[in-house]
Amino acid sequence: MTHEPERVTPQEARARDAVRGLGAPRADAAFRERLKRDFVTGRIGERRVLELPVAWHRRLAWRLALAPVAAALAVVVALANRGPAWTVRGTLGDGIAVVDQFPVPLGHADELQRRLHPGARLRMPEGGQVELAAAGSMVIQVAAGTELTLPASPGRWFGRSVTATTAHGVIRVTTGPAFHGARLHVDTPEASVDVLGTTLAVICEPAGTCVCVFDGVVQVGARGAAQEPVSSGHRRFVFNDGRPPEMAGIRPPEIGRLDDLRARQRSWLERGSD
Amino acid sequence: MPDRSVMEETAQPPSSSPPGQAELERVRARDPEALAAFFERYFDRVYATVYRLLGDRTLAEDMTQEVFLKVHRAAHQLDPTRDPGPWLMTIAHNACRDLWRSGAWKMTRRAAPLDGESPLASTLASPAPDPERALLSAERERLVQEALAKLPEPLRVAIVLHDYQGLGHEEVAAITGIHHAAARKRYSRALAALARLLEGSLG
Image (cartoon, rainbow over all chains, first blue to last red; front, side, top):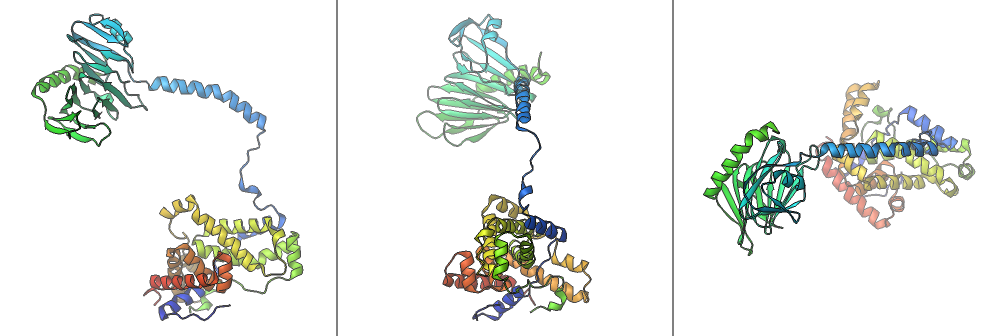
């Protein structure tokens, strides 16, 4: 050993001696033998990568053969994952709605339904409202004078987060059992609302957006700011002039409207379809 | 100092004289016989060092294999006029340092205990002449190894190379790529830290 003299405390000397007294652990004999053989013969390191004995052209053939199968499988899964289509559950009043700039009289429910798809822009007339449903998942009531970009209905296994956008007017939402685990995000000019399973109204007014929660809990905040939970029986108003949002009790007229919407649609939502 | 008589299974790594120049020339030429002798001469030392640095038998085996792989690949760079011991220790240290820097190591350290096979277990399994003393010795060894494992890696290297491998500060400095004075200072800090970790546990 070539230790130089060290000035150490008794504790350090004990620690040093303990290390010097450590034994040499024995390696596994089989490992040692194998390593020695590989080192001597030069085969060391050769078996580090598991190479399957398959010629490149056969692997390529497999890939070419499997590519259409994988593509077909992906299409099948994507189709199977799609949530239910939007259906028109009912209309009230009259007038002409505009779907993607195409006018459709409210009385023509079939035509209206045919034109509604995820991402469609719906503008309701001042004298009428419509209730749109995704079987088992949710019902959206679009009130008179409202502009709404329709969300997709949540996918069965993935793509369970969907987004609707409303510029002005009122939408009321009630969710069903199939919505469990999904998320509806509603964007208004000034507010951001996250719905996880509830009945609520999103009311876009000149001064801002009012979110009235009838049951469940909804996350509401100004766009780009932190959201806060709004519980059953409360409302949160997000102003468009920069004032901080205000929390208060639910607007009394909304209690009756949301209760009515939920009561009428609950059994249908729980059944999952007509 | 612990009683070395109970450590027949785990004797201090041999520090025999280095191979002669002619033999090292044959290692450079990858002569199988010379390689076999070289392996026999250095295997235990490499394995013991990486085991003490890593505290895990499986990792120590992997790392020993890595060291001998590098030795085989770089055999032509071996200087036959010098003791290859420090060269091997440099390779071992660099391999361990690369492992410590890897994400895989950081991930395994979050959950993994020290070596699964405790020195106590191997002592119980071995036919030691005095079981009580062997138990005490094994327990002491476990405590020291655990304390080593708690040291920051550079400090662990300083202790293992200097006290366990018996290398001088100059050699440790060359292996770790730092100045001689820095190696000395690092060793002092390492020893103080180890003493604190072992305080009251060595009896």
